[in-house]
Length: 322
Ligand SMILES: *[C@@H]1O[C@H](CO)[C@@H](O)[C@H](O)[C@H]1NC(C)=O
Image (cartoon, rainbow, N blue to C red; front, side, top):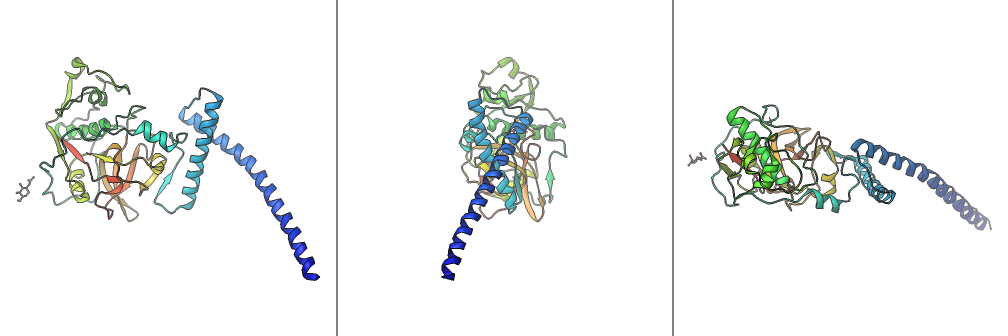
């Protein structure tokens, strides 16, 4: 009998406890929802996002909420050397992000393995930051046009131009987008040829006004981070990476260790390398504006066991020659 009463009491107590937990959860979720909506409003203000209709706003809010939950749980876990954030891509699904940002044009020149002028480089400094040597222009924003390959190539061209002439000139991505012919790429200065984030036709008169001339391109021997190190120690290098994962989309700071595969879909410029907290990294200049990542940059893990490097960074690296 006593057992029966006890189990009944237990049963009633369980219902009571469950009921009060449920109402607590409901009471919590309403303010949580309100706080999330406020967070979305603040995010919209910060990034100047305007929606055309309340329907669109609601749909974007739901995506923002999912991304914010991902960011919060990732950062709370704290088991990676990098953090995520609700950056300007926080109201895009990962599918949308891949579609609008990463149309990588592959390699501009032949993929044949030619000469590698840095093969005999032996003494490389332990750290390198080409920004400190004045060979890197400010962060650009490629806008909606998926011409990241051009920003990648231009970053390396700006570097070699500065190293060979002593002058840092911001070169034109738009000209590469419009005027890319087979190799022989030359750059006019960006003020002559501003970037318009759309396919245009090649302007011969503007193109005639050359601020920089490069002799050609060479490839870094593929799948070798040690070869890439010799190259990046010598000049800024164009690299291709797999930037499709949501952890890359929402990267905020720290040393990125993945997730990512090796389906190269984005071109960026390696402008240095170093080591922090016992982990080696590549210093990467992106073209998604200064609000993304570490003021437009991302540090990516260096010297990983896989020969392709993090996100395939050692698979398709190349550099212009002056
Ligand atoms: C590297 O050294 C080898 C052996 O001395 C030489 O044959 C080769 O031409 C050198 N490569 C470069 C790019 O200087």
